Length: 534
Image 1 (cartoon, rainbow, N blue to C red):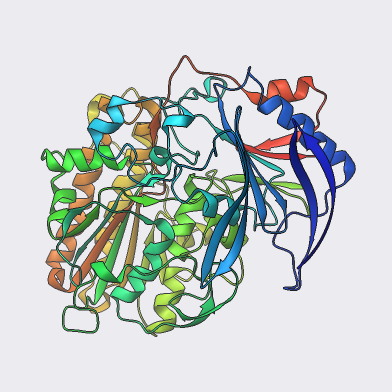
Image 2 (tube, rainbow, N blue to C red):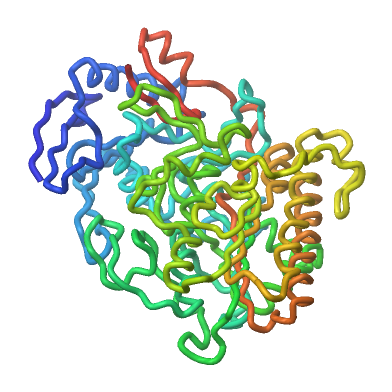
């Protein structure tokens, strides 16, 4: 790879702005950066790393040329380089000023509810950033990556944007950590184990569980790998938690549940206390990762729904955020609004394969079902496919709801709306399991209520706990449908979220865009953290 660039100096720290020239054809990194943009970036860094913004800006990330990246914080920064290493990367830190902002990548930080409650608003120096170097590197592979990625502080409350008591999007352990439970046929009964994985590991693990044969594909580093389960595969199958792969215990069906925005510390504690009995049943019949499954940067909804269902990071699968700026077309892309969700997969990269497509490629004729999920490309039946075709009936209003906590349904518009969506989604999922002559090989059910409730009250609130109880009951209805179909012992289940959720501090507010505009900068701040300079 050849590079050419222009050097500038920021705060005594060497910053290089590069244009990439790659032999792989289309460059996956930053486009050419002109002098005006380079100057704007330097000015923005002065503002973002100032004393004034230190309470709300955890760090700022950027690509610095070729395979080199920087993480810059208020009082420290690092520059690191990635190198191809097998199917993935290894990393070398080239320089550090002060303390490496990404130096602590411990996956077990604040794992377990007592540990999280003991330190609700951790400072950067008390936090950890699991897989931090890899997270940064994958993001800037996207042609839609920003000039600067601003990572907000753990305590930051977006008062001007609704003031959620629960938040995510950051690299830190609590916001990145999703629950991960694998259960049922073909799964080792390990119970709760002290380990973690990545959301990109889920899809290849499901395919290994179904017994498909791996073959040629594209690896995390863009090279060829001969043992891929998907056309492009950033993750690795978790073979050691599978029992009987290649033997009689292999499942004939797999059912996946996503509890959007669900904090695993809260979920696991409620399951242990008997407040989420169906989740507890899954844990007892399989293996749960105490340290969770780490989502990809940015730790937001659609980027990580897609990561889970493709085995690829956001920087590779094409859904780089909930919203971003398309430099080539000069348009804002929004993928997670009610008007755009059903069509979001138009942005999915052509070399990426969904779990539905992979199952049907490996198991021709397999029937797959996707309920209330945008990442549905290739599904035999999908809620959103029906919406796109105009076949779905009007879903609102619903006069009475099963498994809905009236205390929150009545006063909270979001709680009511998501309860209705999840209630009807569970009915669709149960219906999909009612035809014994066409049982799904792979079923995916997306529950939305937990995200709304954890945002509204924070992960440690009564409304969040109510959402877990309600969702657990709906999940139980699906388990009962599988039992009625007579194939429960031949079915594996997994449970994940798309990201974690961390309590914010209402006293820590602010918007860096105000200070950036005061400096005369012209930019777009997409999804509150992706900065593009115009």
